[in-house]
Length: 267
Image (cartoon, rainbow, N blue to C red; front, side, top):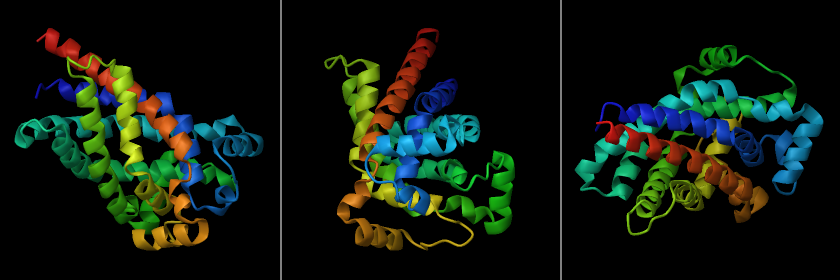
């Protein structure tokens, strides 16, 4: 692996955040079991209207700064693990993606917890500064607070990245001639089409009150969602999730591909 490959991953992560964050905020709010948001019925448009009318458009940018600062490291780690794993997986994009996705959760889970908590924090009108909020979580729950929802995250990312990298690798084959933006967007959609139920559970665990959690395990969260909302409740936020991932992964994987191609040409 080229020593410059991680730099392409870091740039891809930053660009992805800038492209998708407002949609990601809507996704997290729709998927959470926080009563303030769970009471909003309908699709993403009612949630968007509710958010802007009650809190202003700036609410959609809540959590942007820490996500922008940390997601480059998350994607740097992910792409580095993926490229390192491919030789050991005999070039299999699916196997390398699964291994990279699972291993990368050690880096991505704290980022995801802090980002998700901040995205639903505005419901009470408390706009804590990200660093202060992170320190308060650490004081109250210790380091393990940042690994809430780790089990479903491992499942989601091992399955999801196996699909994502497989679809993207297929689209980038010479005989398929699929533009990077399109194969990247479709790869993102493949990620969530296979993992939406477990992603909902992950979001519920990460957005609850971590000092006094309603759900102790993923099974508890899963059972409560199904009992209250039916099995379709596991797909709450489906449309905005798929739109968000198409936009985000289209940008991320295009940036990564272009930078890697430039690096290879310059040696």
